[in-house]
Image (cartoon, rainbow, N blue to C red; front, side, top):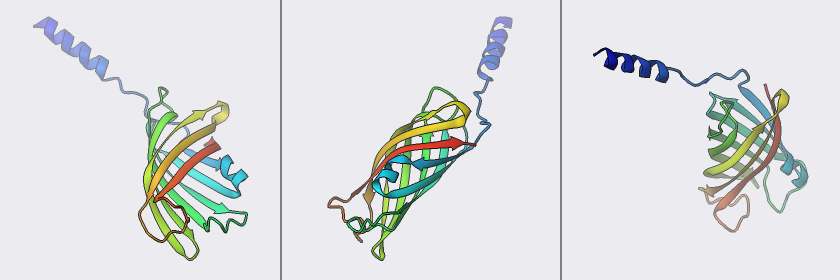
Length: 161
């Protein structure tokens, strides 16, 4: 009986150790480098709920005349799940995103998945890559795409604070 009780207590002690779930810095601000070259600016805010999940929002506004696209602005909320080996909300992730695309006096609603990777460097600077495709749920055709999908592509740099 003592051996069983000892094994039970040993297992309880070993499995009672919880992984670190608290982060010192829980907010991030990012700038989309690829969009700057393409003629738009995207600023993104992300809040890290814990070491594995986060949610955020991005605002994209063209600063060049992009009449052929017809887009005035995009608002993109998202939710992420991180699968990195470190407990710091980095590494490989999957995300679910929505997108409100406004232009030409109309709007489109987009929903879809995305995958990517986040890399955190010294002094909490970070780089991020992601790719996803969303289904356009409305028929207003703001983006003038020929297919009913909208891409989400990102090369971002930022800071965690």
